[in-house]
Structures are given as C-alpha cells and as structure tokens.
Length: 195
Image (cartoon, rainbow, N blue to C red; front, side):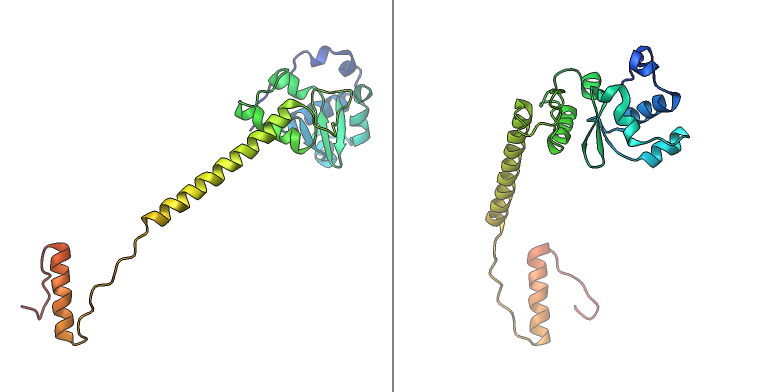
C-alpha cells in the first residue's frame, strides 16, 4: 500500500469548496488511486462504484477549469501539481524513488514542470536527458559484466584427458576401479565377494 502526503488545506481552497460532494470524492479518489508519478489509468466504473454516484471523465477534466487534471493519453490522466506536492520542486536522479518517477514521466512523455505546455514533444528537460543517458550507461555496464563472466567461465573450463580404459574383462575392470578408488579416496572399498 502506497503512503503519501495529504493536502489538509485542500478543503479550504475555493475551487474545491465550490465542488459538489460527488466531485470532491472524485478528486480525492483520483489523487489516492494515481501512481507515484501522479498518473491515473482511467476507470470511471470503479470511481462511480466507490463514490456511490455516477461520475464521468468530462466532469473530472472540467474541475477548476481544467487546472487540476490533464488527459494526456487515451485512458490516462495526469494529476497536475501532484509531484511538486509529494516530492518537492526538484526531482533528483540520484534518488531511487525520484528515478522511478522520472522514468514513468519519460515513458509517458510528460514534462511535469511545464504546466503551460503540459506534454513536451521535445523532452528537453535535462533531468530526462540525464536519466536516459544513465540508463544507457547502466545497460552498457551490465553488458560488460556479462561478457566478463563469460570470459572467466571459459578460462576456468578445463578439458581433462581421459585415463586409459582397462580391458573389458570383469576382473581387470574391477581391479582398475579399486585402484582408482584407492588413489582418489585414499582407502580401498570393501564389497562382499572381494577379499
């Protein structure tokens, strides 16, 4: 279960106070159900079921004149301001959590800092470019490690010459086996029928 900060001042914001109870619940539902990058895969039937009233996508997108939610892809909505509220103004590529968020944003081509141009076609944000470069570097390092492992395995592999196979007669075979066993394990095995 994901844990996140809750905006306790949300109830005091004018745009939120003007909403009907069902739309207030819808706002809370979407903010609670979105992923760590603020992206919600649209499921209006689940929203309607949990709220107890029929709600629509168009109602959600019209909240606060479209300043709270943005539909960026078929079936996905971005919660505007979610990242800034949860993680601060600057995401750091060195942080594993921030790295995951940046990866999700990059995959969905969202520039969360540029609200006037919400979906960036160029992805010129340096964080995205750094993330992409670091992913390439990580892949190269993994490939190098795999190659090193293969090289070390091939160097450690030795082919031993087979020892001379004794005559196929039973007595010679058993004698050779006993001699081998004695040389390898430093004792002679004792079996019934063998003195």
